Length: 81
Image 1 (spheres, rainbow, N blue to C red):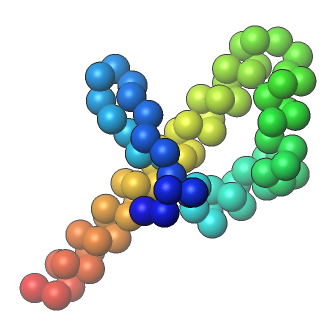
Image 2 (image 1 turned 90 degrees about the vertical axis):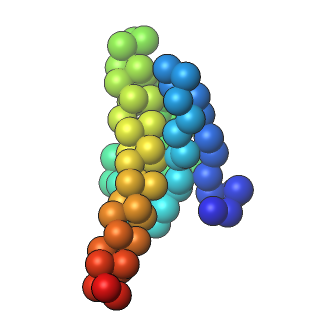
């Protein structure tokens, strides 16, 4: 994966790849009005709990993308067999 669009984080001792896909970009734009507004939204959250909720949403969105790629690869392999 392109290093400009992915990063690896460690949660609970397990490595997870975060990928910024076109789908994720659309979801972020829908929620924040664009990638450029994401930082402002997180920094200007009314309280810590709201900021944490936004960060959790973002990590979940980006972390679920590799699973989607894996599912697509499995389906493709199944069709080939």
